[in-house]
Length: 458
Image (cartoon, rainbow, N blue to C red; front, side, top):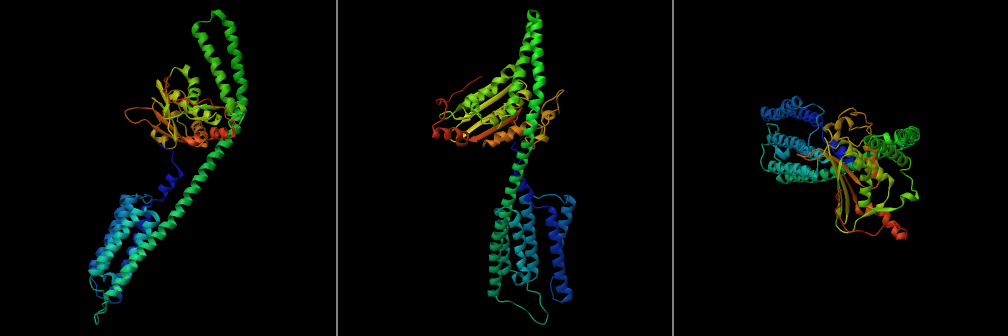
């Protein structure tokens, strides 16, 4: 599942709250009730008082039902909000039918639901509501009860005037709908840009804070790693030929893992360095090989596939990308039952890398937030003694470093009946190869000759 983006969050936040529509409807009910009561009781105008209050009561009953059924904080889906606004238009049309149709000056209130829709709902819903309002206005221009007036005289407005009111409603619906939608859309775009900027700045701030911690950790861990190396060497010399093959293998594995830890700590302190050792270019296949090589001795089967259409892409040997991808492969190996599948593909315009394992996958409660800082998957994916022991920074650092290179990274669980986590990373090909292309233009590329597509089972 894709990490929640700022745009997704803003889209969810723009959904109308039920409480907003309920409050607006209570305001409309109060206004309609006051207008009907004032006209009939105050001015003595003859109108179907009972039928009018029955129509107004339907809005009250709907409000009470919604209050009982849903909490005030409930946010409506677009379709539900459009349906409630459509009810308001129909209810207003019924009330206008009883009180003179478009001759009633309150006919202009047809614009209100359309205006609300334009500010919060997609254009298609607003268009549908606008057509409903104009359609009912057309019907009211032709069929309606007489306009309530004093008993001594009868007021009948010319059809030309009614046509002008209908035209005003039509043009007002179109103009206010488009205008309100445009203003609201600009506000939404600004909110999305601000949310994206805040998210990027927050992630960069977290990573900047971790730079110092990484250097401190590398310094502090150097001494105990050296001690472990010395003790392993002393044990090897002390046991000599007396060591059983199993003990000798364990000592060799111990020394190898210590060297691996030293290499990781060295990379942590130089992720942003651009030393000559990192200026070489490597192919996608060599990049994958460098990721899986340290994992082959850990007892997990690694199925690697490298294939694509056309020449194989090359990239600069970026330590940030290597560290991020290595972290993801490490996680896959840690949580896999027996197998990790790594598939690298390329086409003329995209380079993709997919890493899957056959472990338990991500727990639903962390899947939506995995990749954020301090959200750990140790207690959610793994069991045993180390469950819950992670700080939740590994995937965050990896995701940030990989996305710095221009890639898009998504995390999900395998579709049933398969199990395990799936990490997909995709670069536009021109972004993946941009450093190589720039150096070729300058005549300094050291990339090897391009190799044809191939399948590499490991």
